[in-house]
Image (cartoon, rainbow, N blue to C red; front, side, top):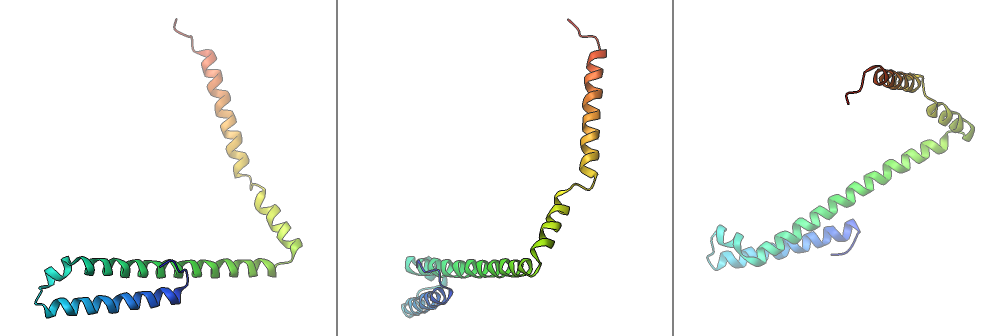
Length: 124
């Protein structure tokens, strides 16, 4: 089950489901109860392989959707002329003033705290 192709994973899942149904039918013919069928090692292994195939199919779907999003974003980026992209990048990189205010405030607080240390007598 090392395939990364969705179609082959779905085929593997279908194959396992058929094997599971056949195994359950055999156990029911033998007169086993639902609890005993659930405890059967072959049934448990087939259920595990089925869950694994379903999980891989979901992972493949997520990967495909992510690739579609990335492709869409790259197409949007390619639609914008290069000069405009550079201009947008420059405006995004420049702080709007909030960062400068924070830095100034932080610097002011550090200066004030150092002055307070100088004013308080040290206990020796």
